[in-house]
Amino acid sequence: MNIWLWLIPVISAFIGWFTNWIAIKMLFHPRNPVSVLGITVQGIFPKRQQQFAQKLGKLVSEELLSFDEIANTISSPGNLEKVQPLIEKHIDHFLREKLATEMPMISMFIGDKTIGKLKAVFMEELTTLFPSLMHEYAAELKEQLDLEKIVTEKVAAFSTDKLETILLQIMSKEFKFVEILGGVLGFIIGLLQVAITVFTA
Image (cartoon, rainbow, N blue to C red; front, side, top):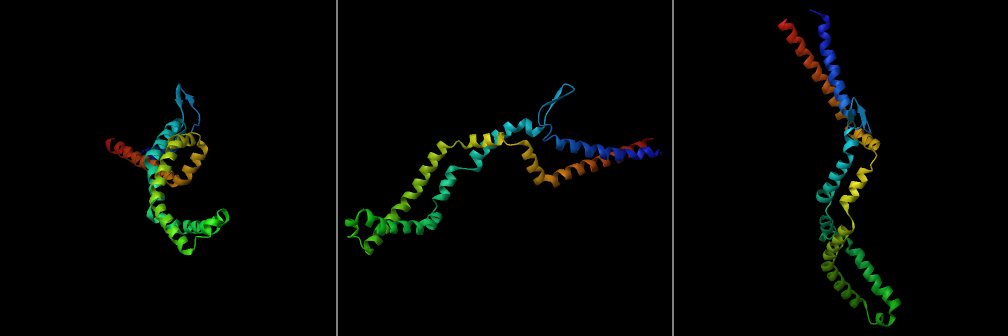
């Protein structure tokens, strides 16, 4: 048996690993379009960055971040209860301190009992007003902020070098696995080629 025949699995493994390594590199390189034998070649991310930015902007604005959800979260009873002590403290300070400074004549007729009743009325009114106020504010904010445009512009202007660094940090093990898998599959295909050659010779 020709000993060089057994180099086929090794060569196939190298080709499998190398093609996968090239494929991973071509996600980011070349940064700018390069003409090779009349064919224009550019990395997938640099070439599709604008489209990716538009898709991501649309996804974030429509699916991931909803102004209605933000308003619902902020105005939920649980969150309102959390800020009630602070609101009561400010109302109490206003009725006892500021009112006495700004309108001393009126403050003379307001005692602790009246202050307690006024605070209760204010808090009850605030509990009713707060949710609708938050929803109105979220609606106005939605009109003022074009979230899709903001995300699209930010991602479109994002450095490809920085994106590559981040993805390599997150997916370095996965990329390495893809490279090794290419080598393993190439080796197996090489063995099959050797087996076919040997048994059909």
